[in-house]
Each structure stands twice: as C-alpha cells, then as structure tokens.
Length: 310
Image 1 (tube, helix red, strand yellow):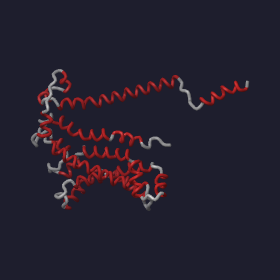
Image 2 (cartoon, one colour):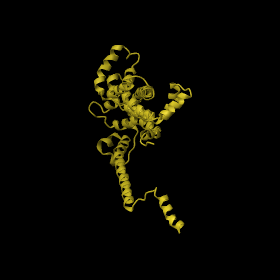
Image 3 (tube, helix red, strand yellow):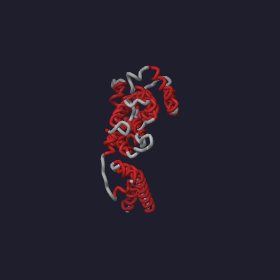
Image 4 (tube, one colour):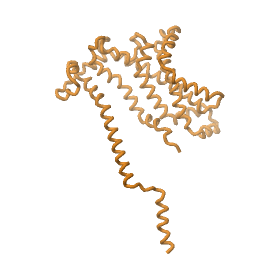
C-alpha cells in the first residue's frame, strides 16, 4: 500500500522540474512569434525594394531611366551595360571609377588594420595588465569618443600640411586620421570583450611560464576573433563609405581621392548624368558586401558574445 502510494509522489517530483505551459501561454507565444516574423518580413521587403529598383535601373538605357520608373521595366525589358562601362572605364568627367576604387581600397585596408592592431594591444593593456592609473587612462580614452570629428579636421590638416609629409606619403594623412578617430571606440569595445575572458586562463598560462606576448598571441587573440571581426567590419564600412575625411585630406587631388568623393561629383555640374549614379552605387557596394558576407559568422558571434552569462 505504501509503495503504491509513493509512486505518484515520485512521479510528481520527477516532473516538477519542467514547468508546464498552459494552452493560453502557448497560444500567446505562437502568436508573438508569428507577429514578430511577419514584422521582420515586412521590414526586409521594404528595405529591399528600393535596392532592387536601383539594381534594375543600373542596367536600363539612359532614355528609359529618365523617362519612366524602374517598375515599368517589366512591361518592356531592355538591358544595357553602357552605364557600367561609362562608370568604370569612361571619361574622367563622367566616371572612370576604376582608379577611385583602387584609391578607396588603398585607404580602407590600412585604415582598418592600423587601429585594429593598436586597439587590440591597448585593450589587453587595459584589461589584463596591472599598472598605476590604468582606470583613469581608460576613462580618458573612453571620453575621447565625445569629441566631434569635425573639430579635429582642420587642426590635423594644418599639422600634416606643415610637416611636409603629404608629398612623399600622400595617403598618410588619411590613414592616420581614420586611425585616430576609430581608436577610442575600438579600444572601448575590445576592452569590454577582453574583460569577459576568465582571469583563470591568464593566471594558468602565467604559472606555466608564458609571458604577456604568448598570452596575448596564443590565448587572447583566438578567443577575441569574433570581437575583432566585428570591429573590423564596422571600421571597414565606416572608412569605405566616408566622404568627409577623405575629401578633406585628399583635396582636389584626383590621384588619391576615394570612391565616395567621385560618386558625389558623378551626376555632373547640372545633374545631367544622374543615371550613372545607379551603376556607380553598385560598384561601390561590391567590396563591402563581400567583406561582410565573408565575416558574417564572426560578426554574429561577436554581437552575441557576452549576452549569456554562466
């Protein structure tokens, strides 16, 4: 009798750890998921339609672009590659983006690598190394984020102009400027990620005789790969799409101007060549799209890092 009476008690204890969801709770969860998915789908469609229209317009003849909307393409399809040919290899007054594309690549790669290397080492110094005044210095670096970018452009330009370095190193001012402006935020983000690494790993490596260089290269960098990739993507996109810094420090020198500066002038002095902007826009997004898709898995891991504790 006692055994039979105890069986239900054991069953209740075994199932008590898994709380049962009421039908109403299940229904609300299902509706919420469906509504969230529907809203996300609507946002994705609204975001994609203009881009899709821009893509179609880039392949339409000039007369069709200037006389009708892109949606009329499906009534009488007409393809042409003249816009891309003019944009990439045409006359300098209307296109010739191939040279500016290379200039943007020369500007963006060093302007992404330099602050990323410096910020990673600075984050290690702020989160792992123990030294006097560390917290105050980090607060100072963090406070530099509030300095408006526009306030430093003219002083930096005068500094480089008076140094005589612009002639032998024409891209140096752009590299240094982008690196300076990116360092405070990059140090702050990487420091936050590196602070979440368990201190026991560093202590164990130090007990085994590893120096700070070995700890940094063999422990921190592999663990920080998602965070570094996330910061690299942001910095690459910021520099690639930048117009203000590139235009300020390159001036009217077409040999070193970035792609964005040329796109701003592509429509012509009277706006007569605006049909070329559609093709130029897609030329400018090719490389950022490749970079983002290639580092997407690291980017997602970097965004989710630290969101779950324990």
